Length: 334
Image 1 (cartoon, rainbow, N blue to C red):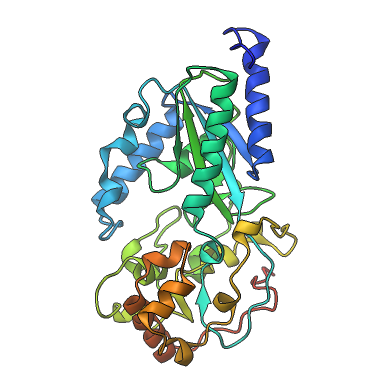
Image 2 (tube, helix red, strand yellow):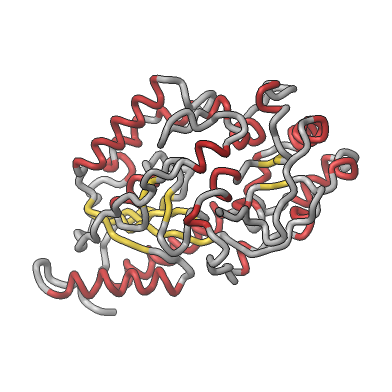
């Protein structure tokens, strides 16, 4: 076991580099470090969250009001650094025309478990290098401004569709964070590169992006197909599902940063379950609750209960027909 590096010496930089290298070995890319002290940029992000909540854009997601999102110390007392990591979930897979659609994040294994397990491995690795260091692994279930901290750590910028965008990985990234009491050298925060583009705003069929950087969950297909526990979806949403029954990727598919040249992930934990790419509505409507439970084992889509799947599928079949999906699953940006 190596001894802890002395503060103010090259040891801290070497440890930071080794930490990021280990994160990449575990399958994360990109990775970056942020100073846990609140920067002017984080203050702006916190203020934006408060405006978003005040406007009611979070709909029934009361957990977004958790005050700990503004208090990193509440998650780990003595925190000094935040390691942000991204796990690409983009897999180039053919989508059969006529089948219902499921958001890419749900194609593979439950990302909460996948990322949490790898971050805990990383935390134990760090503890082995610096005995006594404290750390905490956070996935998106933790009350953390995850995209803001990822932006601060240089992973990418928050785009007009509310997603974090990386120049090489696009926005198909699952995020995780490792908080630590070590004060490690921070990376440079990312700068925005959306420019004048408004393709995501223009493409949303329900108007859930009323202005740049604002997502109104009350109009969002993803929110309603995953979180809405009402027997019926609002007509303005249900009639515009365009085939989506579990989440929605439209605002990502039209983004120029998610072009056809993106590298397809070979990570086994994000590879799609075949039935999700071939979801036949009439056939799925007769599956029993037990069949749904079996198909959704170890999936993030278990949050959608079987009766909700049936509701979503029925309304998708009755809605305006979706546009045919390209063979590789990406809408071209011409």
